[in-house]
Length: 313
Ligand code: CP
Ligand code: NVA
Image 1: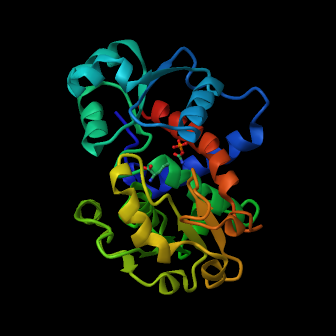
Image 2 (image 1 turned 60 degrees about the vertical axis):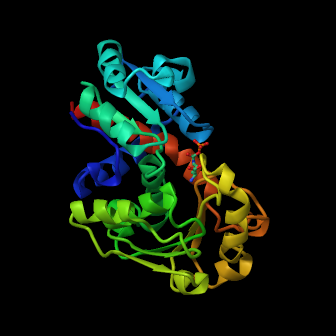
């Protein structure tokens, strides 16, 4: 049974195939296309808010011929203490796959281990792999020459991540950069160095030692092809908001910081953005800001991930 819980759940050649398929889905959108999910229902269990992930998965599952079934965790017995394992076993009798957004990363791993159906990680406190695959595809669309391999165009490029360098999107980009052969430098405040959990995962995957962490934002963006940031207060961290805002202010992506990257660098943000905090409105509006292409590509890339998991059952 194939799952997509982390970036390395696809080999480099499988990831290259996902990008190619995403490009086909994007180019063919609006015309009748393949329906690999025909006759299937996919449950989507969400414990946190979502705009992009929820809508892109619901639309994508529908476009592939399947039926999305959105389940707010608070509305099902899982939210009242039914075990993760029993939930997985019961849902496996009804539906063909699970898309899960939750807090503990171990929850998606336990659902995958206990159920008999593919599980997709739609964001945990630790990783957000659907986002990183869509981001990488968005960059490859720009960097690959027409007809050339999308995946190969990522190799050797440098991404700089600023701000909350211990958050799920940062950890996921560390693992993603290792999978795509990219370089990554992260700049954030004291106490926000990428943690033991991502280091242990990199070691388990044989990908240790691939990132640089600094407290100097200008050092991180030097020679960067991409400048990336995320919210300073992730879902679940609301009680730390005041302290985080004070600590992270030096890492805001301003026009001056963005200008210190390569002259053709792109600005990226997974969204939602809070202009005036982690990034200025001026940078969000820069012609090299590709935030809405990232958002759109969630749909095409997740359709390719769904198709790959269904084919790999
Ligand atoms: N970027 C992202 O995952 O957005 P949502 O929280 O709106 O799904
Ligand atoms: N780091 C953010 C990402 C939102 C898509 C969060 O977890 O809230």
